[in-house]
Image 1 (cartoon, rainbow, N blue to C red):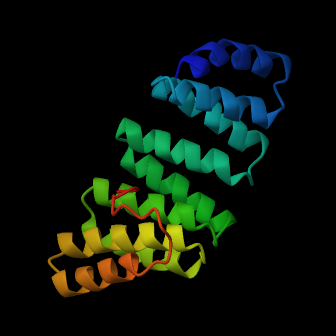
Image 2 (cartoon, helix red, strand yellow):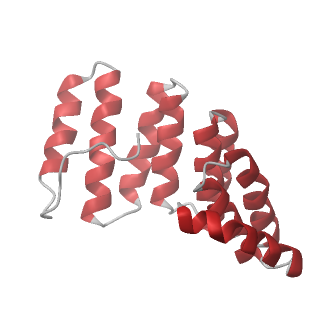
Length: 168
């Protein structure tokens, strides 16, 4: 966090000197978000998206900043917009699901996780998705399906699985 604090004013200056460079707006937003200046980070991410509307990282950062601010509707819209541009972005499905769950739309939180599974072959990401899916199913009192999803998560063949819930 200390390095981000030091970087924030430099990146702000870089944005002024290079107003059409999306990377400076994005990095400035990251510096602000990582120093808990969330409300200030939103316009920086929005500027990065305006300058380069196809960069997934800026949408993910904006959506997650909106989530952290409790602006769940805005975050959902951001993740959905990213999915229209990059429909194969598994991370966006995961974060959309988390945002729906945080907004207490538990039934709707399941579908994005199911879609995310279609867009990744990474066993670590699949394990995270199955874990979050199990939580979503458990919240819906679908315990048998939740247990099945946990079994799929634990069947993942990688050594550092520690059963922590990551995205939700």
